[in-house]
Image 1 (cartoon, helix red, strand yellow):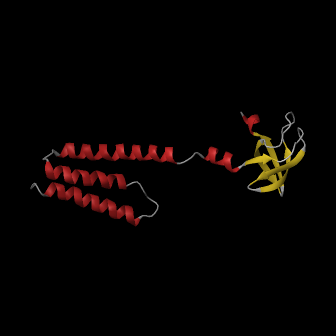
Image 2 (tube, rainbow, N blue to C red; image 1 turned 90 degrees about the vertical axis):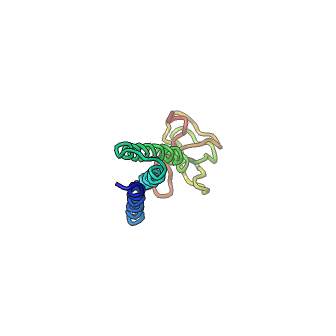
Length: 147
């Protein structure tokens, strides 16, 4: 194969993978492979590498890039349980007896609420978790009862 043909093959592969990536709106897995093929296009233009090493480097770049991208994405995206805890947290507005009823502030509004905890009284300012809702009435549980 002529010296110019090998980098051109990697460049064409990168272009093909990029075209596939852009034509499929829900598929995001090929961008790392595109970057790997572009890297190999530049690398093979500078250094004559055996074919087995080129393929091995392509696989290595693609797998390492995909693993790095997935771990970066996992660190960047908050877990659904932490997000749910924040969204379903309310503040007690007045003292609520164990198993009793009272008022809580949830999403900026005052709601009627029933305590599901039959042992612990809730004081004003306590944080509670909204466990359920029946119309305009919330069922709440103290956050420390979950630990």
